[in-house]
Image (cartoon, rainbow, N blue to C red; front, side, top):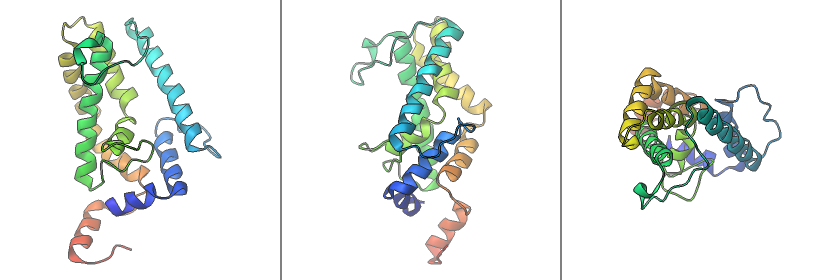
Length: 195
């Protein structure tokens, strides 16, 4: 998987095609023809802004912007603390699935410049469905420690929505894996080529 991922990441054409497959997972009806990576990022930013606004309206929790200091968690307001905790939980799950399938967490398609770039790429596919609603629900519940409550809500959503098997299938789709990864690994270790 790492070789396939490196091939995608080092080719501008393949990276863009992969990013479009990622984007299509939550915007299947949109025509992505001719869009650059920058335009995809812009559309994703606008989509996420709407997700935050919808969550604010749904539960009545005030949210202005994503603001946090990774070195001072307690200095954030409750909604940003909850978002940080929810995202962190989602990153852990994405990291486990990515590594378990043999992909490299640092080789991102959309994100780059960090040792967790691909983790952020994949986790971003599920934030609007899992992490953001959990964060807003935790704060709306009035919990004194929203970080604790949100981790439980994320865990429950991951189980209820069967996120891990979905993430495996989505990863295979966005990375255009045409063969079962277990067969590829068996072929790799036996010295046989899968090509």
